[in-house]
Image (cartoon, rainbow, N blue to C red; front, side, top):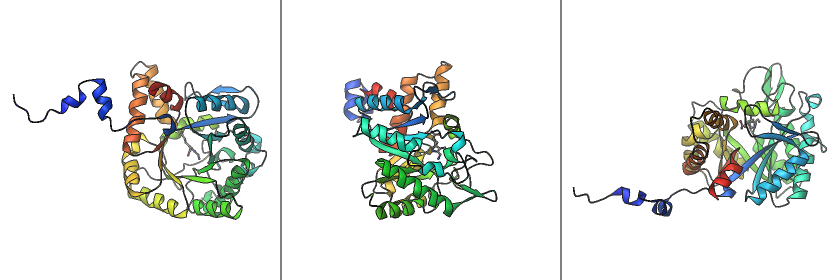
Length: 324
Ligand code: PBG
């Protein structure tokens, strides 16, 4: 048989495959999400996220040191607010001595070079578990944006490098940028969750922070997963309003969106490989149906190949160990 071209030549052994690999993962691609709790020596394994933990500040600082030593350069902080601090205004979220603010300071102090990103949204602080303030059973946009601005300023004051609004209210990026400018936080970045879909794959995360919505769902603010063009609109608007980095969330079911956005914008694009995506792999591995290491590397490589420059993932630490 005569063949002019034999594509298998470039796949014939590991060396040549690595020579022509188009996508490679590196430690600084990853953003490690961390769940923080009050107390001391608290280590709580999240039931629907095996081998992922919520820790008090002391243990979180140790974890951040380890992540740094592995080459991970950024973390994304989430806190579990105490029940008695929750209300409809979310005011605990801008308490200068709140759990988030204390965590930022402790981590900055211990590992100053680690890029600290902070979740900006009301749900962990809301008695209703929603990302906004409720009036007459509705999530009201503009008062919520005012709260998000206060929260962002308090994170910046505590030393956050990048605030990450995950709420999907209209106009919040512009409002936060303007407030940061007015208060002279000219080196604080904004990573906007620009295309955040109303997804069932956030279930395990809501277990982690006890933040499931008390009524209804999040479909009046998070995007409809049927939509693609809308994701571009949202993302371009966030960039216009001042976002430094944009994010698509979840990741694996949204690779088409990641690619579209990577092609459409001139800022770094991140993707959030969310809690349900983590849980699916863990569950299948537990059943003996998937090989964990292979599933993790293939998933994360696909997300990067789709166009993500950065990947927030609960597998960050595992992935770094696998690629080194
Ligand atoms: C809430 C928030 C959520 C996640 C990040 N920020 C949950 C939600 O919108 O209900 C999900 C993360 C994950 O599932 O890993 N502002």
